[in-house]
Image (cartoon, rainbow, N blue to C red):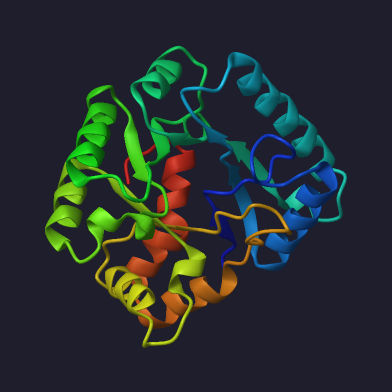
Length: 243
């Protein structure tokens, strides 16, 4: 079976609310390896209020982590890339333009988040702004945004614009009576979700578990949809190709 990708996680030690130190990061990545993940895109939080010093710390800590991973038993089979989970504001757009915020693996893709209660017109305007500046936005953990719940027209509009939707693996868990999980599974089967990620914050909070969600997708989605979500789309992001 082809190895999995994780395009959204917080496993760089000591830079956000994710992994607290190098030991935890390495333990989390070992768990990811056991889940079948072989390619990890680290996406620490970054906002318009963060300083250039914080951006430099992210890069320093990422290099330290990548070097340490190579010394682990699984290191030769694990690839790490760098990005950011960007909390949208006009200031974060300036940071992108000035090279003080990272796209996904150096591509034109950007992982962007908003307050879960953000109004749809605000979210729409911000994503349009990123598109107009040449970026390809990926909406992080789209299952959280209340303005998208039960509003298929909004989802269709975002897809038509060229917005890519990422869902956390944990969003698929729950019984068939769970309305949120039911909704996300339906969107998966219909091919409206583009990416699945762990959004892991280390071993202390949301460990990098993805295999069960990936297995559900393989069982319940058409083969071409599963292939795109689990393999093709992550590969295209890293290669800076259009999904």
